[in-house]
Picture 1 (cartoon, helix red, strand yellow):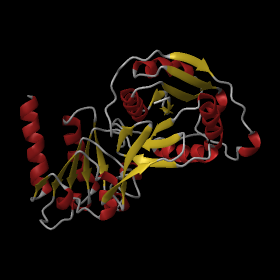
Picture 2: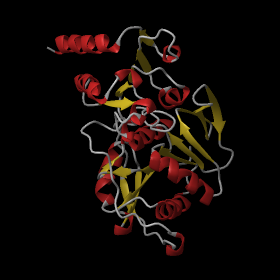
Picture 3: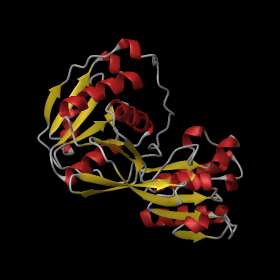
Picture 4: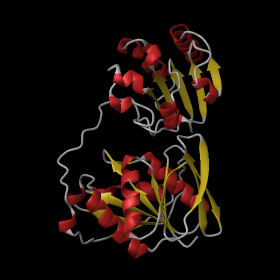
Length: 322
């Protein structure tokens, strides 16, 4: 492959895990792997990209990039891409990645393939696998023009350390201020000690069957027992009832997740919910209704009252952990 360029997304002063995952995958494919990082003080994060395989790191650093402003970031990244001339551009399919990449592709006059869950290389082309019809089927998609612009759902690949050359080049970009119509004054991120659902390796979600907000405490306890990469989630029904904040919602109108383990407690499995978590590696459903649609998608199903099953599960894990 002649060359790959990764968009390295920054949040809370750190590179998003999903960006490191696509960087690792690009390294696996071979060829020259570059990364572009945009932000205020972004240069300080370059060594992290080198650690995960970046041979060259293009840094766009300046106070005007302190917050993500689509028009400014599109201009900056597109100018870097025009300079690098990669055959492939990868980004993580986070909210920011899904916003940025189609606009970059349009500016470069090529198509974009969004929210992929697997990639394979055939010659110089990448074949991308992406869910369609709310996750009921998959399409294998190939870009016909270069650069191929592809975003990948977080947790689709492992982030593995494999040192790259890590040469840093600062890029001065020329922004057309007349095209920047938005000013971002602040970004409010949900305050939580738990990892973000889109990057968590384990998610314990609750639905209407939780009966009330106070019962989510046992799901939080279970998630804590399962380790620092575990978090909690909720169905739309639980969020609409006011039991959890929208930041916790998993589904078509919430977050799309792909953890290694997804535990659904008291979630019937509406198609909108399954569209958001159907690519989870292992799905465990706990529901007292044997006809609940979630069991059709689950790898393991427990037909029982979650108020009996979850406490028993917590107790057994506590025993194992001592």
